[in-house]
Image (cartoon, rainbow, N blue to C red; front, side, top):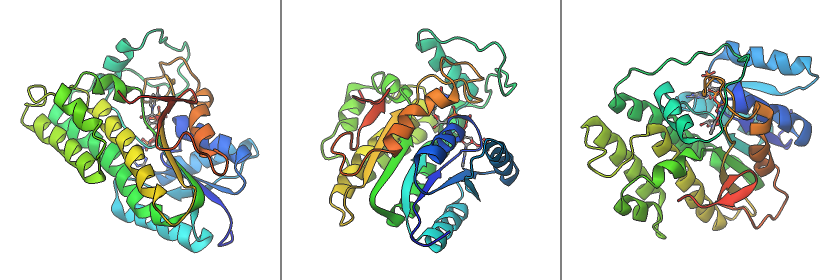
Length: 302
Ligand SMILES: NC(=O)c1ccc[n+]([C@@H]2O[C@H](COP(=O)([O-])OP(=O)(O)OC[C@H]3O[C@@H](n4cnc5c(N)ncnc54)[C@H](OP(=O)(O)O)[C@@H]3O)[C@@H](O)[C@H]2O)c1
């Protein structure tokens, strides 16, 4: 490793779409690719499988909900690379009941005959208040905190990709008009997004979220936060002295992974296509920048 060598980091990449993004970056990205996992054992296992394909990512532990783990990641990058060139925020969770609800809204999904991970459909029984809190803690706050700690390392021409979901748009259109107006506020700031996400969780805790205009998808709400985050971060980075840093969010499509109980139209490598396209956007890309992207095309968030 050398302090000026280029480096790409993918969060939650021991399995699923993140794993496939690492595999793709290993062949497309000029530099080291860091495969991260919250479990050291799962990360090492994934590393072994990629090594068997002749690919050589580097492993580093990372739990995006653990501030100390995120700081260790930053220190590792600073010491060994002196910066960061690609950050793919892929790590996320979803309660099974959420995904069942969403899959019933997708048309054309099908169950794979031989689930590659042996996953089973088990409906979540946790109360919605808990699901809202825990989902938001990983998908929104974990992603945001990782960005806050790692963004100072981004070098000119860095690419940031938030792996979000079309579930965000499906959820946003079911929220009240007043909330939709707040999502589309031209003066939107990170503080306002944080307030929105906090309000949703607080409403869920008191069982008043529907009465207050929110849709009852904690996963969808967390991904609205992620999409809005990309938009605001891009605006902030446009004013940064480091040129040409591009942030986008995207949906990988309907992918058969553990998250979806191995039900989905796409393989993990197909799901990795749009995240990889965004991670590899050429220098001085003018569009997409701060957008939500599906199948390599910009989509409205509402
Ligand atoms: N599959 C789909 O159809 C679909 C559709 C739309 C969007 N997405 C998005 O695509 C991304 C990848 O999903 P997937 O389907 O590949 O899911 P997955 O197979 O369940 O993989 C999720 C990954 O995130 C990791 N993770 C969870 N919490 C973490 C934390 N606190 N810190 C670090 N890593 C953490 C998991 O680690 P462990 O192994 O330790 O749990 C795992 O590596 C997610 O952002 C998801 O929302 C997926």
